Image (spheres, rainbow, N blue to C red):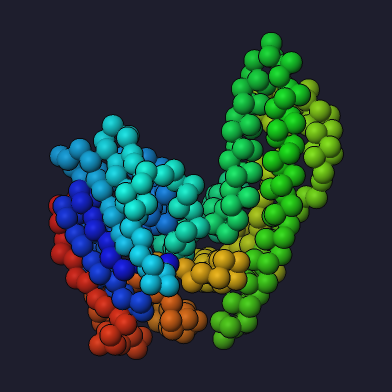
Length: 359
């Protein structure tokens, strides 16, 4: 669903800010420290239930206040829906859909958004865990079964590792291994399918962009094992796991390698190659979500023009679907106009934020 309106109250450095978005390109501009990225963060929270800037969402509560609140209205096929999220400094939080309290998992995939932000560069530069986290979030967005199996696997893995640190509870191994194997089988089954589809999206986006002969691809070590085979492998590694006090086999050990012109970008990519790789990875994410859900995600582009040169950022804008809702942050409107974005178009809007005291 595209987002129609959003209201931020005591969120970051926003005392109270309201915006009504258009269905096309929305530009939020102002100098650094004016709270532009915080608006994208709020949209992201209402899309997936998590911030992309911090794991401690209580940090979003404005200084000298007790509770932050964000609320947005979405519309799809003339059906309107309100989602709100409140967070207190003592870590209490509440998520509602149309005034009904829900759990975070109930909004995952409901109003998908694709974020391109400096914080996301860890996808190409970070650890295997960063890349697993990226794909777990993406695949959970398009598949409730994947999200459910991942949640079960994560909880069970924590329990099994706790037993490994306390060998006196070894009799519990069979119980945890059975649950772990069942959820792992489902996760791997979905990953094999989704990895292939996502890779096709990467190839398509690369061809669309290919003015500079750029090719981005994904390399994975896909595992195809049955529940019984996974249980047997866990049993085989039991002594090693007891010695190391952690589970050495499962989807939590998978890695995803991005290749730039067939070379691992993490190890050998230049700064420019990392930047353009991330852009194409994100455009592939957009395409993948749309293909799998028949929904058009909202694109969140944080400080796009500061991160790419004119030619590359212009190429990125050319790849955007004209009918997709996009929210761009920038320090001024000069770059926007240079790239041919018509803010007089009734589908497009601009919002100016003035610098405020930091949180």
